[in-house]
Image 1 (tube, rainbow, N blue to C red):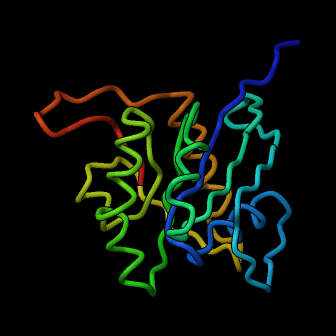
Image 2: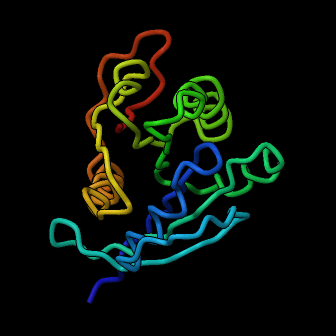
Length: 169
């Protein structure tokens, strides 16, 4: 019997956009009703994607500015990032390209990112998945996409001067 492949998946994004809710919703099928700011929580889930067993290590990070110096410590060894933003917060949307993409490119330049549609085009990502942790809609699809981008990396396109890696949104 073969050992399950380990994939480290790190969630990033502004505070209070739903990173922790998405992780709890994915791992327990329960939507938390209370907001509790995250410091750093880790979860592990064994999942089967395309017939392969994967040990998915889920890392939850705090988006608040107070954690700007500590948060990058969780990036080491990451296989994929889930970059979250709120559809009702323009600031969290703008911070994707003002704050999060520069931070991730600085600390982990070649790690794929799973994100959202409008920014997909802006930063050259391959997939967009919108989900609702509250209703469970597409939550599993987000994590399946994150696993697949690690297991089956997209074929590299011809690189332009600014293109760095394949991203999934």
